[in-house]
Image 1 (cartoon, rainbow over the protein chains, first blue to last red):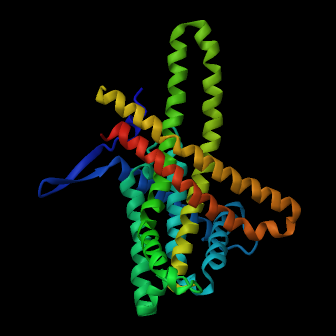
Image 2 (cartoon, rainbow over the protein chains, first blue to last red):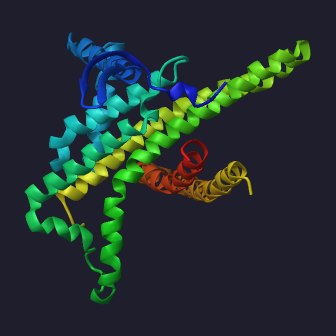
Image 3 (tube, rainbow over the protein chains, first blue to last red):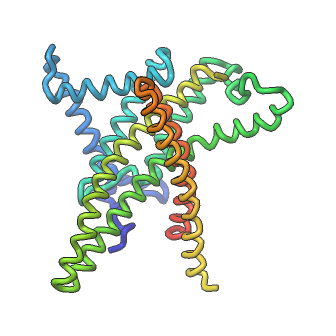
Length: 248
Length: 75
Protein backbone atom coordinates (compact mmCIF):
# COMPACT_ATOMS: atom_id res chain seq x y z
CA UNK A 1 0.00 0.00 0.00
CA UNK A 2 3.03 2.24 0.26
CA UNK A 3 2.69 4.67 -2.69
CA UNK A 4 6.49 5.07 -2.90
CA UNK A 5 7.13 1.33 -3.26
CA UNK A 6 6.60 1.42 -7.05
CA UNK A 7 9.69 3.59 -7.55
CA UNK A 8 12.03 1.12 -5.89
CA UNK A 9 14.92 0.13 -8.16
CA UNK A 10 15.60 -3.59 -7.92
CA UNK A 11 18.67 -5.32 -9.31
CA UNK A 12 18.12 -8.18 -11.72
CA UNK A 13 21.74 -9.25 -11.86
CA UNK A 14 25.04 -7.72 -10.82
CA UNK A 15 27.81 -7.93 -13.37
CA UNK A 16 30.69 -6.04 -11.77
CA UNK A 17 31.90 -4.47 -8.56
CA UNK A 18 33.79 -1.19 -8.76
CA UNK A 19 35.20 -0.25 -5.38
CA UNK A 20 32.27 -0.41 -2.97
CA UNK A 21 29.62 0.17 -5.64
CA UNK A 22 28.02 -2.58 -7.66
CA UNK A 23 27.27 -2.30 -11.35
CA UNK A 24 23.92 -3.97 -11.91
CA UNK A 25 21.27 -4.44 -14.55
CA UNK A 26 18.27 -2.84 -12.85
CA UNK A 27 14.53 -2.60 -13.41
CA UNK A 28 15.17 0.98 -14.57
CA UNK A 29 17.67 -0.22 -17.19
CA UNK A 30 15.25 -2.92 -18.37
CA UNK A 31 12.46 -0.40 -19.03
CA UNK A 32 14.84 2.02 -20.73
CA UNK A 33 15.92 -0.81 -23.05
CA UNK A 34 12.27 -1.69 -23.74
CA UNK A 35 11.44 1.89 -24.69
CA UNK A 36 14.58 2.12 -26.81
CA UNK A 37 13.59 -1.06 -28.63
CA UNK A 38 10.07 0.26 -29.20
CA UNK A 39 11.36 3.56 -30.61
CA UNK A 40 13.80 1.75 -32.90
CA UNK A 41 11.06 -0.63 -34.01
CA UNK A 42 8.71 2.26 -34.79
CA UNK A 43 11.23 4.45 -36.58
CA UNK A 44 13.13 1.76 -38.51
CA UNK A 45 10.22 -0.58 -39.10
CA UNK A 46 7.76 2.10 -40.19
CA UNK A 47 10.09 3.90 -42.56
CA UNK A 48 11.64 0.73 -43.99
CA UNK A 49 9.23 0.44 -46.89
CA UNK A 50 9.42 4.19 -47.76
CA UNK A 51 6.07 4.18 -49.47
CA UNK A 52 5.16 7.34 -51.39
CA UNK A 53 1.69 7.22 -49.83
CA UNK A 54 2.48 6.46 -46.19
CA UNK A 55 0.59 3.80 -44.28
CA UNK A 56 -0.58 4.27 -40.69
CA UNK A 57 2.70 3.45 -38.98
CA UNK A 58 4.75 5.42 -41.48
CA UNK A 59 2.49 8.44 -40.91
CA UNK A 60 3.14 8.21 -37.17
CA UNK A 61 6.90 8.10 -37.72
CA UNK A 62 6.86 10.94 -40.27
CA UNK A 63 4.46 12.95 -38.14
CA UNK A 64 6.67 12.88 -35.05
CA UNK A 65 9.73 13.67 -37.19
CA UNK A 66 8.07 16.70 -38.78
CA UNK A 67 6.60 17.82 -35.45
CA UNK A 68 10.00 17.92 -33.75
CA UNK A 69 11.69 19.43 -36.81
CA UNK A 70 9.22 22.31 -37.02
CA UNK A 71 9.37 22.83 -33.25
CA UNK A 72 13.16 23.12 -33.34
CA UNK A 73 13.18 25.38 -36.39
CA UNK A 74 10.53 27.73 -34.97
CA UNK A 75 12.12 27.93 -31.52
CA UNK A 76 15.82 28.09 -32.39
CA UNK A 77 16.07 28.96 -36.08
CA UNK A 78 17.27 26.97 -39.11
CA UNK A 79 20.86 27.01 -37.86
CA UNK A 80 19.82 24.78 -34.96
CA UNK A 81 18.86 21.91 -37.25
CA UNK A 82 22.27 20.33 -36.64
CA UNK A 83 20.98 19.57 -33.15
CA UNK A 84 17.93 17.80 -34.53
CA UNK A 85 19.22 14.28 -33.70
CA UNK A 86 19.76 15.32 -30.07
CA UNK A 87 16.37 16.98 -29.65
CA UNK A 88 14.53 14.18 -31.47
CA UNK A 89 16.23 11.48 -29.38
CA UNK A 90 15.44 13.32 -26.15
CA UNK A 91 11.82 13.88 -27.16
CA UNK A 92 11.22 10.29 -28.27
CA UNK A 93 13.01 8.81 -25.26
CA UNK A 94 11.10 10.89 -22.71
CA UNK A 95 7.81 10.31 -24.52
CA UNK A 96 8.27 6.54 -24.77
CA UNK A 97 9.47 6.20 -21.20
CA UNK A 98 6.59 8.33 -19.87
CA UNK A 99 3.97 6.38 -21.81
CA UNK A 100 5.37 2.97 -20.89
CA UNK A 101 5.50 4.04 -17.25
CA UNK A 102 1.72 4.52 -17.29
CA UNK A 103 1.07 0.81 -17.98
CA UNK A 104 0.11 -0.92 -14.69
CA UNK A 105 3.05 -2.77 -13.07
CA UNK A 106 5.48 -1.00 -15.41
CA UNK A 107 8.30 1.09 -14.03
CA UNK A 108 8.29 4.88 -14.44
CA UNK A 109 11.90 5.59 -15.42
CA UNK A 110 11.47 9.38 -15.47
CA UNK A 111 10.33 9.29 -11.83
CA UNK A 112 13.99 8.61 -10.97
CA UNK A 113 15.70 11.95 -10.50
CA UNK A 114 19.06 10.55 -11.67
CA UNK A 115 17.61 9.95 -15.16
CA UNK A 116 16.12 13.42 -15.57
CA UNK A 117 19.21 15.12 -14.10
CA UNK A 118 21.47 13.28 -16.53
CA UNK A 119 19.26 14.34 -19.45
CA UNK A 120 19.16 17.96 -18.24
CA UNK A 121 22.93 18.06 -17.62
CA UNK A 122 23.50 16.65 -21.10
CA UNK A 123 21.58 19.58 -22.55
CA UNK A 124 23.22 22.09 -20.19
CA UNK A 125 26.77 20.95 -21.00
CA UNK A 126 25.97 20.84 -24.72
CA UNK A 127 24.85 24.47 -24.49
CA UNK A 128 28.01 25.54 -22.63
CA UNK A 129 30.49 23.59 -24.78
CA UNK A 130 28.89 24.46 -28.11
CA UNK A 131 28.26 28.07 -27.05
CA UNK A 132 31.89 28.61 -26.05
CA UNK A 133 33.29 26.86 -29.13
CA UNK A 134 30.96 28.55 -31.58
CA UNK A 135 30.87 32.07 -30.10
CA UNK A 136 33.99 32.25 -27.94
CA UNK A 137 33.87 35.17 -25.51
CA UNK A 138 30.69 36.48 -27.15
CA UNK A 139 28.89 33.63 -25.38
CA UNK A 140 29.05 35.69 -22.17
CA UNK A 141 26.81 38.32 -23.77
CA UNK A 142 24.11 35.86 -22.77
CA UNK A 143 24.43 37.28 -19.25
CA UNK A 144 24.22 40.92 -20.39
CA UNK A 145 20.74 41.67 -21.74
CA UNK A 146 21.03 43.95 -24.76
CA UNK A 147 19.43 47.38 -24.45
CA UNK A 148 19.49 47.44 -20.65
CA UNK A 149 20.75 50.70 -19.05
CA UNK A 150 24.30 50.40 -17.74
CA UNK A 151 23.48 51.43 -14.17
CA UNK A 152 21.18 48.44 -13.55
CA UNK A 153 23.64 45.93 -15.05
CA UNK A 154 25.33 45.16 -11.64
CA UNK A 155 21.92 44.01 -10.48
CA UNK A 156 20.88 42.31 -13.71
CA UNK A 157 24.01 40.28 -14.51
CA UNK A 158 24.04 38.25 -11.26
CA UNK A 159 20.35 37.48 -11.77
CA UNK A 160 21.01 36.30 -15.34
CA UNK A 161 23.97 34.18 -14.20
CA UNK A 162 21.88 32.64 -11.44
CA UNK A 163 18.98 31.92 -13.77
CA UNK A 164 21.37 30.29 -16.25
CA UNK A 165 22.83 27.97 -13.64
CA UNK A 166 19.49 26.98 -12.12
CA UNK A 167 18.23 25.87 -15.54
CA UNK A 168 19.27 22.22 -15.23
CA UNK A 169 17.64 22.14 -11.77
CA UNK A 170 14.24 23.30 -13.00
CA UNK A 171 14.59 21.41 -16.29
CA UNK A 172 15.10 18.08 -14.52
CA UNK A 173 12.87 18.67 -11.48
CA UNK A 174 9.86 19.55 -13.64
CA UNK A 175 9.81 16.23 -15.48
CA UNK A 176 10.76 14.23 -12.39
CA UNK A 177 8.20 15.79 -10.05
CA UNK A 178 5.35 15.68 -12.58
CA UNK A 179 5.76 11.97 -13.23
CA UNK A 180 6.44 11.19 -9.57
CA UNK A 181 3.44 13.15 -8.28
CA UNK A 182 1.17 11.67 -10.97
CA UNK A 183 2.11 8.10 -10.13
CA UNK A 184 1.77 8.70 -6.37
CA UNK A 185 -1.72 10.19 -6.88
CA UNK A 186 -2.75 7.23 -9.04
CA UNK A 187 -1.48 4.80 -6.43
CA UNK A 188 -3.25 6.62 -3.58
CA UNK A 189 -6.60 6.53 -5.40
CA UNK A 190 -6.10 2.89 -6.38
CA UNK A 191 -5.37 2.24 -2.70
CA UNK A 192 -8.76 3.75 -1.76
CA UNK A 193 -10.46 1.14 -3.98
CA UNK A 194 -8.88 -1.80 -2.15
CA UNK A 195 -9.38 -0.19 1.26
CA UNK A 196 -13.10 0.44 0.63
CA UNK A 197 -13.74 -2.99 -0.84
CA UNK A 198 -12.64 -4.54 2.45
CA UNK A 199 -15.91 -3.26 4.01
CA UNK A 200 -18.21 -5.75 2.25
CA UNK A 201 -21.01 -4.93 -0.18
CA UNK A 202 -21.45 -1.24 0.75
CA UNK A 203 -17.72 -0.78 0.40
CA UNK A 204 -17.84 -2.34 -3.06
CA UNK A 205 -20.55 0.12 -4.08
CA UNK A 206 -18.57 3.02 -2.62
CA UNK A 207 -15.37 1.89 -4.36
CA UNK A 208 -16.88 2.85 -7.71
CA UNK A 209 -16.10 6.50 -6.92
CA UNK A 210 -12.31 6.18 -6.45
CA UNK A 211 -12.21 3.64 -9.30
CA UNK A 212 -13.73 6.10 -11.77
CA UNK A 213 -11.39 8.75 -10.34
CA UNK A 214 -8.45 6.43 -11.11
CA UNK A 215 -9.64 6.06 -14.70
CA UNK A 216 -10.00 9.84 -15.06
CA UNK A 217 -6.57 10.40 -13.49
CA UNK A 218 -5.02 7.90 -15.91
CA UNK A 219 -6.41 9.99 -18.78
CA UNK A 220 -4.93 13.12 -17.17
CA UNK A 221 -1.58 11.37 -16.69
CA UNK A 222 -1.61 10.42 -20.38
CA UNK A 223 -1.92 14.14 -21.18
CA UNK A 224 0.83 15.00 -18.68
CA UNK A 225 3.14 12.31 -20.10
CA UNK A 226 2.91 13.75 -23.63
CA UNK A 227 2.92 17.38 -22.42
CA UNK A 228 6.03 16.95 -20.27
CA UNK A 229 7.90 15.27 -23.12
CA UNK A 230 6.94 18.25 -25.30
CA UNK A 231 7.91 20.77 -22.61
CA UNK A 232 11.25 19.04 -22.02
CA UNK A 233 12.02 19.11 -25.75
CA UNK A 234 10.88 22.71 -26.30
CA UNK A 235 13.01 23.93 -23.37
CA UNK A 236 15.94 22.04 -24.88
CA UNK A 237 15.33 24.01 -28.11
CA UNK A 238 15.18 27.33 -26.22
CA UNK A 239 18.41 26.59 -24.36
CA UNK A 240 20.12 25.57 -27.61
CA UNK A 241 19.05 28.88 -29.13
CA UNK A 242 21.11 30.65 -26.45
CA UNK A 243 24.15 28.61 -27.45
CA UNK A 244 23.77 29.59 -31.11
CA UNK A 245 22.66 33.22 -30.75
CA UNK A 246 23.70 34.52 -27.30
CA UNK A 247 22.52 37.99 -26.33
CA UNK A 248 19.22 38.06 -28.23
CA UNK B 1 6.85 19.44 19.35
CA UNK B 2 7.21 15.89 18.12
CA UNK B 3 9.68 15.99 15.20
CA UNK B 4 7.53 13.65 13.09
CA UNK B 5 4.52 15.93 13.52
CA UNK B 6 6.60 19.00 12.72
CA UNK B 7 7.79 17.25 9.55
CA UNK B 8 4.24 16.56 8.40
CA UNK B 9 3.09 20.12 9.19
CA UNK B 10 6.10 21.47 7.29
CA UNK B 11 5.23 19.35 4.26
CA UNK B 12 1.68 20.64 4.39
CA UNK B 13 2.82 24.25 4.60
CA UNK B 14 5.23 23.72 1.68
CA UNK B 15 2.32 22.63 -0.49
CA UNK B 16 0.63 26.05 -0.09
CA UNK B 17 3.14 27.34 -2.64
CA UNK B 18 1.52 25.18 -5.29
CA UNK B 19 -1.60 27.33 -5.04
CA UNK B 20 0.36 30.29 -6.41
CA UNK B 21 1.54 28.21 -9.34
CA UNK B 22 -2.07 27.16 -9.89
CA UNK B 23 -3.15 30.81 -10.11
CA UNK B 24 -0.30 31.52 -12.53
CA UNK B 25 -1.00 28.57 -14.83
CA UNK B 26 -4.70 29.42 -14.80
CA UNK B 27 -3.92 33.02 -15.77
CA UNK B 28 -1.70 31.88 -18.63
CA UNK B 29 -4.24 29.49 -20.13
CA UNK B 30 -7.13 31.85 -19.48
CA UNK B 31 -5.42 34.73 -21.21
CA UNK B 32 -4.42 32.47 -24.09
CA UNK B 33 -8.00 31.34 -24.66
CA UNK B 34 -9.21 34.95 -24.34
CA UNK B 35 -6.72 36.09 -26.97
CA UNK B 36 -7.38 33.07 -29.20
CA UNK B 37 -11.10 33.87 -29.27
CA UNK B 38 -10.40 37.49 -30.21
CA UNK B 39 -7.95 36.56 -32.96
CA UNK B 40 -8.13 32.84 -33.84
CA UNK B 41 -5.73 33.18 -36.78
CA UNK B 42 -2.89 34.26 -34.48
CA UNK B 43 -3.56 31.54 -31.90
CA UNK B 44 -1.41 28.87 -33.55
CA UNK B 45 1.70 31.04 -33.68
CA UNK B 46 1.59 31.62 -29.91
CA UNK B 47 1.22 27.97 -29.02
CA UNK B 48 4.93 27.55 -28.26
CA UNK B 49 4.98 30.66 -26.08
CA UNK B 50 1.96 29.31 -24.22
CA UNK B 51 3.79 26.17 -23.24
CA UNK B 52 7.03 27.95 -22.38
CA UNK B 53 5.09 30.23 -20.02
CA UNK B 54 3.25 27.24 -18.63
CA UNK B 55 6.47 25.31 -18.03
CA UNK B 56 8.27 28.21 -16.35
CA UNK B 57 5.30 28.98 -14.07
CA UNK B 58 4.69 25.37 -13.24
CA UNK B 59 8.32 24.92 -12.20
CA UNK B 60 7.72 27.15 -9.15
CA UNK B 61 4.86 24.95 -7.98
CA UNK B 62 6.99 21.89 -8.63
CA UNK B 63 9.72 23.34 -6.39
CA UNK B 64 7.33 23.57 -3.44
CA UNK B 65 6.11 20.04 -4.15
CA UNK B 66 9.75 18.88 -4.20
CA UNK B 67 10.30 20.50 -0.77
CA UNK B 68 7.21 18.71 0.55
CA UNK B 69 8.38 15.36 -0.85
CA UNK B 70 11.88 15.92 0.56
CA UNK B 71 10.41 16.64 4.01
CA UNK B 72 8.17 13.58 3.87
CA UNK B 73 10.50 10.94 2.48
CA UNK B 74 14.10 12.08 2.84
CA UNK B 75 14.45 13.72 6.27
